[in-house]
Length: 368
Ligand SMILES: Cc1cc2nc3c(=O)[nH]c(=O)nc-3n(C[C@H](O)[C@H](O)[C@H](O)COP(=O)(O)OP(=O)(O)OC[C@H]3O[C@@H](n4cnc5c(N)ncnc54)[C@H](O)[C@@H]3O)c2cc1C
Image (cartoon, rainbow, N blue to C red; front, side, top):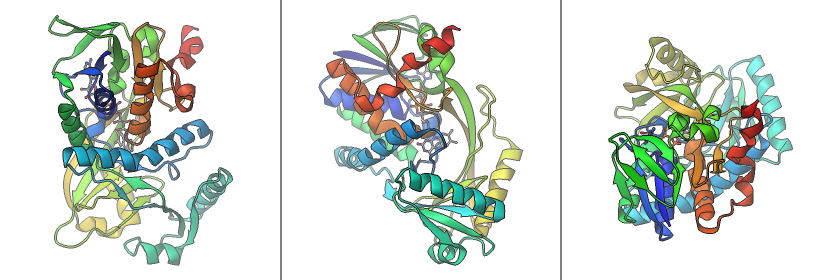
């Protein structure tokens, strides 16, 4: 089986590594692997904290991928010797005022109704857990089972794992898909038995793919800031989620604050207003953020879809498989997506857990 993967973000690289490990001959075509949304993401692996009303099917998939994460990173780290920054830290959701508290109580009731493990905390309990939180916080909730990973380290480890598994890299932009071949910007052609389109928010831009699902994937801009501690420890240990921002403390001393959600097409400008809003929201929750060194502000493009769920499986075009549309969960969903696509390539069947996320679910809507 010769597989051509278009796009070397966390999704394309995970698929390439897993497919090559199963003995398939894999080529990844990407002018700059690892340069997309995967390089900007915060790396929260928080299916319970981030559950959204009405997205129960997606929750199941997120939980399944979360369960597969420890083995996924353990194999990756053992194979490459690289660290991915994967750690089990838990997340606290924080309420600043009575309105936040009311919304939090509703969310906790919803999470418990779904059988999820969440602990409601009073203000004093919350601050005992995280003394760096502002004294004014009104209460919160702890999801001890949430994790995090460093997406940049994860991508670096995946690139190394791919190289070791003899994945071929073609540093080129794909202009068009003529499955099972792709036409390169340089004019050349790369032919396989199947093409896997994993070009993130750009997936619908590739000619020949748009017919399959192009209008269902769009860019959703997210801005983020990164800070670093000086000599002392970071002011928080766990992921902290507020209404207007979340904070992700990494073991190496980095703190990531995210993220805006903006419908601005393919624009990746970093704006003063967004940086201001993120820092203000973070300072309100954790005042000592003011003491950290600002090292980076960045913007990335999430591959959004009409129902916020990924697009994974065979498309209407013969020989073209989609693995995109992971929106705000692409880092979390990498293991389960890679397993599903490799299973499809090996057996012709999509695993049951991935069936609801078929690209074909948009066929009727899009043909109207
Ligand atoms: C601010 C922000 C915060 C986020 N936080 C989280 C988080 O905490 N947890 C989480 O799970 N997810 C998070 N996400 C979402 C996550 O980053 C994405 O869902 C995920 O990175 C998508 O991965 P991907 O491989 O599909 O796309 P990308 O990482 O965007 O990769 C796409 C690749 O395709 C290549 N490409 C594009 N066009 C072509 C072409 N024509 N030919 C060849 N190659 C092409 C690009 O060069 C790129 O390397 C966040 C996203 C943002 C922006």
